Amino acid sequence: MTKSIENLKKSGLKITPQRVAIVEFLSEYGHLSISKMYELVKEKFPSISLATIYKNVNAMIDNGFLKEVKIIGQDSRYELNYGEHSHVVCKECGKVVDIDIDTQTLFKEAEEKSTIKVESSSMVFYGICGECAKGHL
Image (cartoon, rainbow, N blue to C red):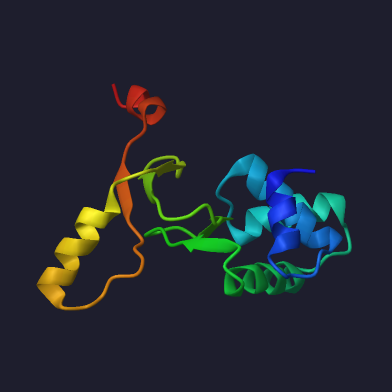
């Protein structure tokens, strides 16, 4: 059993085959849109509905088990909640990569400039990945 499925059990959410499948695919692929998740889970559970995927993803977000990554011009992607980190997105192919940035310094500066206690962030950087850049030469 993967660590992610163990964490799902610890999260207090009911363990269902559909949730296990969602967790397995997110563990394998990292960042998935609802439509891609539905496509993958449907291969395992042909009778599953899109509404069931939404319901399960929303329950796991509400529980803090999953996080939504909002990307300009694309469908939101979902990922396992591994804690605070940022993302870099290729504007050409849509590839999403996790990056760790020292957010504490940014949080402190944001708090000083706004007088609001910062609790979390959602930073997405945009550019062109190496593979897509090769195609532009």
